[in-house]
Image 1 (cartoon, helix red, strand yellow):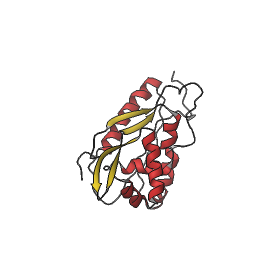
Image 2 (cartoon, helix red, strand yellow; image 1 turned 180 degrees about the vertical axis):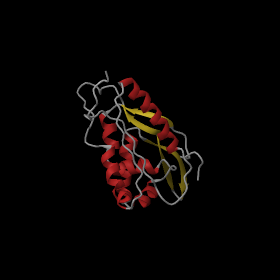
Image 3 (cartoon, rainbow, N blue to C red; image 1 turned 90 degrees about the vertical axis):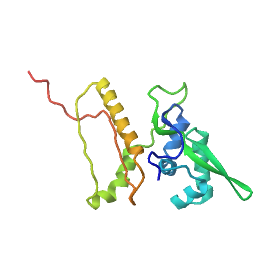
Image 4 (cartoon, rainbow, N blue to C red; image 1 turned 180 degrees about the horizontal axis):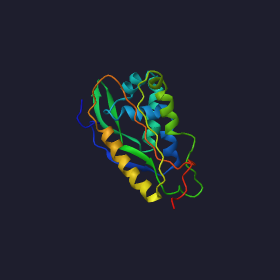
Length: 187
């Protein structure tokens, strides 16, 4: 296994600026494909086997991700008369751009990483294997932005861990404004 996965060059971060890019990562199967490609580049055949889905279905989703700039062919090899393509991510981390989309476009809002994490973590919770914390703090928008940059570094560290062991672990992190109550300013 690579010490610094994956086994191909890619950008650290990529801002998603178009609604079609955001929609592309919102599909659960495409999200799984992106997660698998954190390990190493893979062919559609390898992805289909790992996902236990038909090759044609996986090929469709790979094409959607490629068309939207989230995947690219990182190498090829000749197998008999066919050129086999290995796909890789274009960036370690994708994030929705802070700037508003172009006029007339609207970013999709029909997916939530925490909903995915909640579904994935239910079994771990039932088995007493879920590690989690939730905290609330009244901070400025600038402090929140600086803290998020620190969390992005932690995510990057997690993504770069050497792949080993038999268990796939999920790592969910977020920062969001809430209506959580606050104490009045001390006098």
